[in-house]
Image (tube, helix red, strand yellow):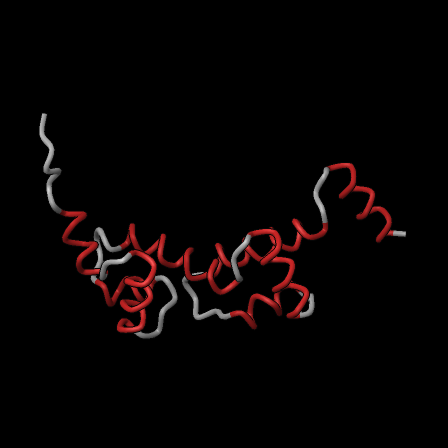
Length: 128
């Protein structure tokens, strides 16, 4: 009976079960990206099989769960790098190895964290 109520609620709000699963995964990642979490932790949190969770996430978001986790970490790292060292930033966004963080950061941004810091600190070349 309770299961039917949940289904009726989903229909009434227009939220599919797939979107609810994706929301649960993204919320977990956004709340825990700074910890040493991985795909298994995310899957355990959902209570859904690994294959179903990864398939649904990919269908809805067009990216894998690992790609999403990495992008969240890199986006947060960009703001932290403005005030913190590369090593501190790496640990603060959930990487255990600053060298690996540098490799991943460069892959996603096409520049090293140090280059990103230097460019961000340069005064704007265009003046009025």
